[in-house]
Length: 199
View: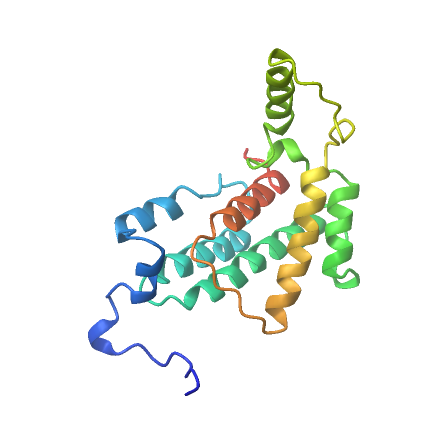
């Protein structure tokens, strides 16, 4: 027997938690909402970029009732990130019609619009590494770092590469269903916030 695609949600169960959420835990609607509410923009971005981001947050919220909306939320958060990069490029006087997404992301790195220190996921990486080395020294464990000093855009470069890959996969119809999109939302939130610093 083949799997059938999810059809239109029956009216009687529109506001019922999708049963597929039970396989990953017992998160309540209130907990789900609080998680998403905590991933807000600071408000410096243009209105259309903010709306793309809010569309993504609301889609993730409503995935509580229809699990497959996670795919749409993931696609929409990438739309928000792409809209932000284009809006910042236009602010800088660039003709975005002449740039691919790859070229725009490369420009964002070259012009230092994106720095690791402004991403929550990497902001304290150097301090954590220093603490780890101090602990090893205290314990008398010899340690030679396998990497040199941290570059100010290591995380940003990795994020840009992941952004390109995931966005292209989504654009070509690949299915990505993961229940917790916190990392993606946090990364794009931080990207948008640093492209448009709060006034």
